[in-house]
Image (cartoon, rainbow, N blue to C red; front, side, top):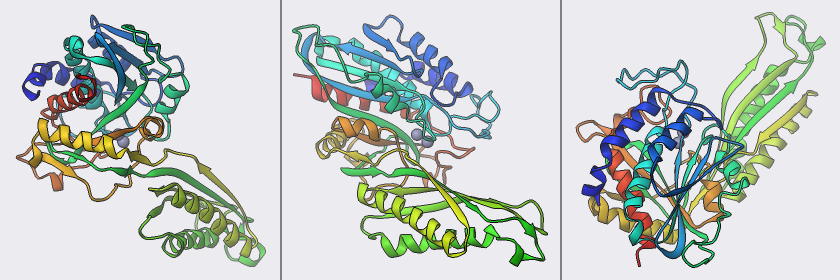
Length: 401
Ligand SMILES: [Zn+2]
Ligand SMILES: [Zn+2]
């Protein structure tokens, strides 16, 4: 499988480099979509161009009937300035493919080409999901679902329903050597909810605090109390995180401002803890503000849910990986990681699994490699044919009869 996938490597690498040079943000990634469509040109695919986003759903119909397997690749980049010095470094100021989504897209195109050549072997269909807007709460996957991603026509061969029964996604990670496949059953990635707390007091002269209502100490107390709330009310075996990443107030040293703003993120790996964090953050912020006579507004953004890998789908990933990259390169992860993914929306509806694919060259120390979302992160091109082989093998696992 890996040898066959090498035949698609050069084109996949060229596509990744092109996408890396011209990264796009959010739900509208027209250049990326056009590059994908050009790379899929001539393949026997039924293409659906989504209207609300730049998403593309490409359906490959095998010669015989059977279930449908969904394979996902995300297409969007991040708002940060690249400083890798790579030849293919971003040509767009302040935008960078720092999460490997350029590689995900290139791998999915490679898998579409490889599976199209094996159309005759397929009993069922493959739905290639090219989605924008994975990062920063855009919920591109949800938009594609809302637009009918999973509402497929019957199989052309016999009119059978051929529902989407399995779903897989690959995420590149520089925190493992190239070719290492990592996954786990159950929660793999956390839910992610944004948190904004606006504390409003009353502005005044710094020398006359009694005549004002200083929101700054109130905000500081809320930040501290949130950490106490987490350690005292969240089960350590069902963990949660509240990180305040930004606190802003005031203009100068001798003015008491009217407001202070706190911004953070809340992570959990169960619906129960997610709810407890949301309830707790609101209670703590409102209670402390009230204790000091300040008013408070708590705004919680409903972000990605927990990405829960189906147990059987995860076993499929690990056994397919053992065949493709070898058992010594296949890792069963002991614990979830607290990052988040909008693939959660897909595995909420279809049993499926996400796997991480290592992409730090073997001659470098992966424990010291810059991680995803870093301005210096680099993804090894040698991982691309491995990802193509994994996508293809996962589809064939379900569709070879
Ligand atoms: Zn990311
Ligand atoms: Zn990502």
